[in-house]
Image (tube, rainbow, N blue to C red; front, side):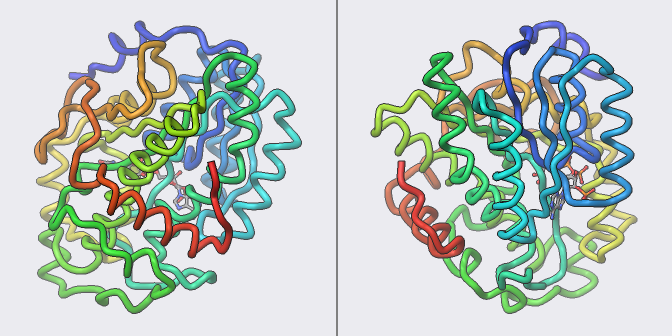
Length: 330
Ligand SMILES: NC(=O)c1ccc[n+]([C@@H]2O[C@H](COP(=O)([O-])OP(=O)(O)OC[C@H]3O[C@@H](n4cnc5c(N)ncnc54)[C@H](OP(=O)(O)O)[C@@H]3O)[C@@H](O)[C@H]2O)c1
């Protein structure tokens, strides 16, 4: 049974707010963009160029014909593309940005480097979002100054806590393609091995980034909030991609996905962070904080000490700045 309709009824109007969200061709990002358009927000969707991107934007505009919607090309595998997308957002949003949702992600891909030299999972899931957040910070500050707050929402996973709960700087370094290989067929069938370690590290980085942002924003007296969500286990395109790319076996995946919830239910965490008036900076929304929190309504819990500590926050920040080649001062 879906919890989404009852949750959807609790969301406030988002009229007058400008929202930027990455990865809306399917899954949680698609459900969130559709909902935000219905709630009256100005919505900018950031996707890499593809037929999926064109088709999903056509569907979005058809479902909310009166909404102020913009499609911006952004390939998270390329820092140059992210910088160009941020410049386009600045042109389209002189009013500032009220919500940035760093949603897009990939899972269990092969051990390959992006053109910038980083692990394809870490650059897509975290490093490019770190850069996008840096580039959009003046717009987030502008909206916060005008309306009293703005929000950055990251999308993590239950995978943040597996297997070690310890962020390893190697995965944030220019070592793409040299981070453990692709694993055996058996490992991949069982959701184990190096492809999964790289995914786990990227999802731990999403949580550590939120903790570091929250800490730095609070220290500087900023009105910008930093929040993070996880979708439980949601039936999206993510698993399909991982199967076709060799990162998951279809037999166990089909069994495992019987425990999943619909994609729009998986969007309840990010939508809570983006929309709920009472959501605080430093909160985590998801269907529970445990390793088996797969389904159910998104509830708030506090950031966890295994990434919300000075050593991890500073490691995350220093390695991410090194990767993008620019300081990110708050
Ligand atoms: N589904 C779950 O059970 C689950 C569990 C935990 C966490 N999550 C997280 O939830 C988030 C959303 O995933 P989902 O489950 O909704 O999966 P999804 O349906 O596969 O959506 C992922 C989105 O990310 C986009 N994306 C991938 N690579 C990109 C790139 N280089 N540049 C720009 N966009 C890119 C995809 O666009 P393309 O069409 O271009 O590929 C797609 O729009 C991810 O961060 C994921 O880690 C999901």
